[in-house]
Image 1 (cartoon, one colour):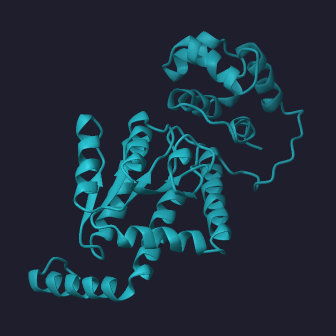
Image 2 (tube, helix red, strand yellow; image 1 turned 45 degrees about the vertical axis):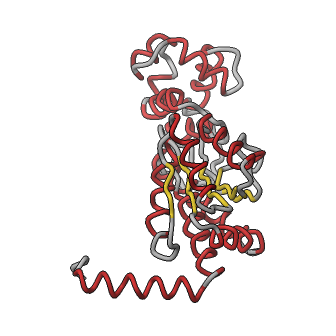
Length: 280
């Protein structure tokens, strides 16, 4: 069995910073040799600082790197017989994608009851304009949602940059008649996003939140919380499940005002055909 696959399991279920994930990825990629390296040698291999290696060990529940190294040696020893739930031969990339598929299956199982999703869709459909907030890692998801939402909603306002203007833009949306805001807040939970949610609710906006955990730092500042797990097995997060949830929420928005959504879609298709926007 691939030693790297054994090492991957050390990091399952543990929220690591990007630097810590870089070290973890390095340990997986070099499992056999890394088990016999010092903390400084691992730091050099991963091109990080030595204290970062120590912090990774402590984040995993060890007293320091020596204790983690002992565990690594146990895992890469050919005499250790470890039972694995995944197929033999899977590497760490395959395992990461299998875990992401599990996140999608979990999301699908929780959509059996659509009442909360329907409420969220109705809130967003009724808001004119509809502000969509997503900062840092959530900005691409907010943009993706906003691009398609603009085809069925008359006034979508994308809020994907922070700074002093963010609060102004939330205020402007509220003054223009907005009654709800969609926020996508993902690890590592930008402080500006949390503050924007707090301000939005203080202004009377209903907040619909897409995030990875119902007990995360953003959940306390939302009226409706929709969750989808974030994959954390690679150096940077995988967002397949949150993106799927965003598209499911957009479906709920369309279902809340089906006649209007269909009318706007048909108008867009006529316009696209007239302007020859697409090649097929």
